Length: 111
Image (tube, rainbow, N blue to C red; front, side):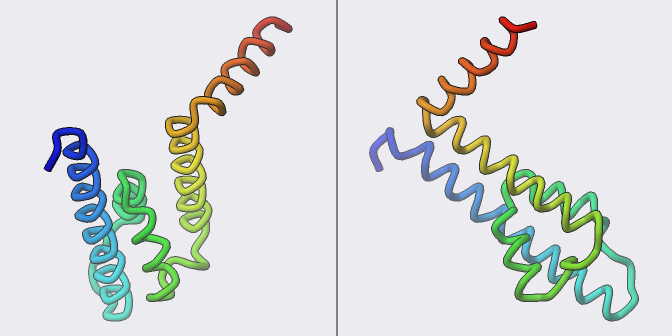
């Protein structure tokens, strides 16, 4: 594998593992909720989503019908999704980043 692809391979492996673990945690929590057993905390579910498991969390929500109505959990998960989308756009598109910094400079100039 060329050295230039190594960071992408590491990122893909990381995201694959985090998403697998996130889905397993959601499934385990769903099973425990049905059995009225000890549950996975919402903060842990949100943490695993925030560190890269958002796709698995949203998939688990739909497939398992888990944590879809519960508020504020669903709202917090959606906020994590939007923050991650904004972070990707900010990093991946230098033009957007430049526009954002221009807007920040403009606002600072007005204050």
